[in-house]
Length: 491
Ligand SMILES: Cc1cc2nc3c(=O)[nH]c(=O)nc-3n(C[C@H](O)[C@H](O)[C@H](O)COP(=O)(O)OP(=O)(O)OC[C@H]3O[C@@H](n4cnc5c(N)ncnc54)[C@H](O)[C@@H]3O)c2cc1C
Picture 1 (tube, protein in one colour):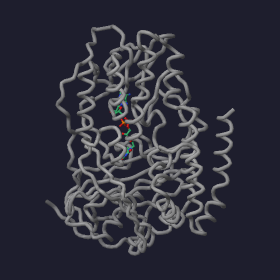
Picture 2 (cartoon, protein in one colour; picture 1 turned 120 degrees about the vertical axis):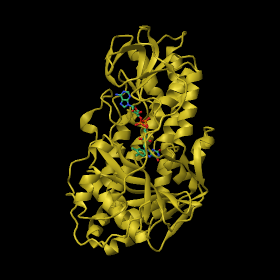
Picture 3 (cartoon, helix red, strand yellow; picture 1 turned 180 degrees about the vertical axis):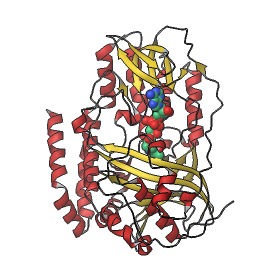
Picture 4 (spheres, helix red, strand yellow; picture 1 turned 45 degrees about the horizontal axis):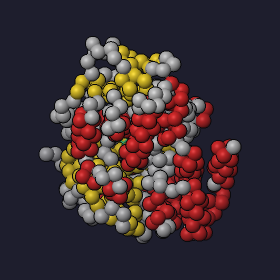
């Protein structure tokens, strides 16, 4: 095993300009590669110089495969075997709906490291799919102020969750097809999916669950005003770290590491990032430098440089990078066109929380709602097809109340976009002082519009005077937009 020496302090900073174009939403291969990062980091020695050891892993589950010679039609085809696609497939097939899932690699392990609140998984009976639970979470507001939250947080066992969903699908008769969907064509009452292997599969309904970048879902483009969460994470074996192993670090907004890298400070003051850390034990930890939301997106190379500086300051020497992840999540913006002749769920259904970037727990919780609507329409008694079918299923997912609440979460994102480091710290200081019913409900998308308004008033009451000034001076624009949109929706 190779241990890196502490790098010398940086004397120059070559960051990308603040208005660099957004990175492609496609993941790792389109983000700057290691060689580029290293070259730009002017000889920097750090965890970035270690190769990631993770190898693609496959699950050993006996699936029923689609038989290409079989030209009969399915009730539903689900594109994508991520958390959204498999949960929906498992749920809808339990109603007797005949489903085929298409994915280039249905048995591959999911690549992302997922964190969730334990109560969210508990409510779905999925606690067994967490591989580590921290009874408390920590928020470092700054060097002087730390908050401890008594809400347990867990790391999802990707392997257990995916296995459970695949086994549920297998026992409900779901078929799988190993290919990439290329084209979806619609007739009045059915659709055909053409795949990368030349096969064509037919169904009464197509659901897209291929994540954030999908050519199959239509948006009203000019209104797609996303923010972006960007982060770099590593699961690392370290010589040691300063965090308690019974507390997960949800946000560390301290910036004392900028002391030895003063050139990083002004941009961090304007476009702050924080550390998210899951300490598994004294030597194993998941560390992720995260920009909560930015527009245009904070350059990835800058996120990495901040992380190098932070780990050095915290005295964290990385011995091995066991896994790494490049996280880029579009947040907020317009919902897909509703309805349209493909149903969307997960990243492609607009389910990401516009203020936090979280999505997994919410998608798993809403998939049964979508499944019920699909089963009702596709079931033998209703036999609803075409526009009517898609209209019903989209309406089941995006009820008026959920759409209004989402507008509010988008308002939350717009507010965060306008806050600098000091404003962000003041915001979270007041936010986590709220009654847990409100902050927990906000983070888990559980509040009604009325409750969200009550939360805002309470937040204003808890806010310090500078924070009140921030809200009064920076929020009128987004607030006016929120009121306008809600008024339009109520007509
Ligand atoms: C690095 C990272 C970390 C994240 N961490 C968290 C977290 O901690 N907590 C949280 O709540 N959310 C998190 N998110 C946000 C969100 O929950 C995830 O992006 C989640 O994986 C989205 O699930 P999904 O099923 O919609 O799409 P994905 O997980 O992206 O799955 C899409 C599937 O579709 C397949 N596919 C793609 N194109 C096609 C095609 N043309 N035909 C057929 N199949 C196709 C892909 O191979 C993949 O299997 C994270 C996101 C990222 C990127």
